Image (tube, helix red, strand yellow):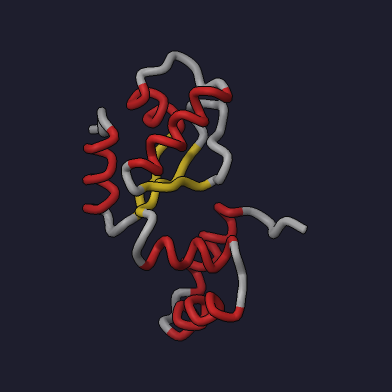
Length: 119
């Protein structure tokens, strides 16, 4: 069953180890909106942040069937996402730890979600 409130969504994300795959439709329904216009998507992003959550892709999709990954703003998942989105010497340690733990497949999946690096 899909979460019906931001509180429930946060609990579900926490129960799933800090990350949850869902659809834009679920987020739209939690928001109580009819369409995923730019204003609604911005409101969803702001409310997720208020509940200690972030999402990938960084720009919420405008089509309800598109997938979204929601994750806690702190913890190991956030550290990995931040390392990929904001590469630096200090965050490179996180990526090395993933490789050392044979988590290359996980790293590749995150890169796919985030997309190619921006220039």
